[in-house]
Image (cartoon, rainbow, N blue to C red):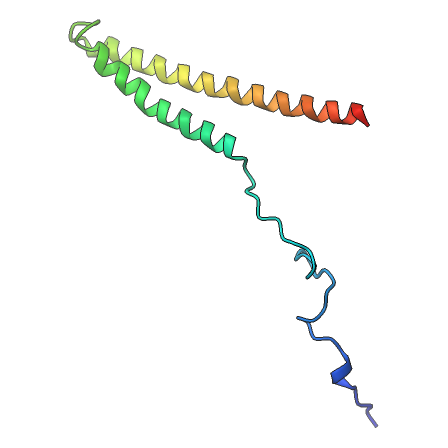
Length: 111
């Protein structure tokens, strides 16, 4: 004969307070902070804006004033300015990455 289980004494899946898989335990507060810091998003948006405005602005500002209608030279200057913005973004990103690594080394030394 089969035995009968007393179901009223067992906890249901929703009543359990342990951690199942990757979900947090019932008593813990979940972490809702963004994965990317706000300063990084602001820098990305600023460089994106600069990547659009600086080359186009330099083209139209110099095509008739500095280069007297020669659009080849104005286009070359716009390409150079786009590359300068890109190089600036890379330099800022590398400096930010190095500062985070130095901060991590300093916290390890303090221990």
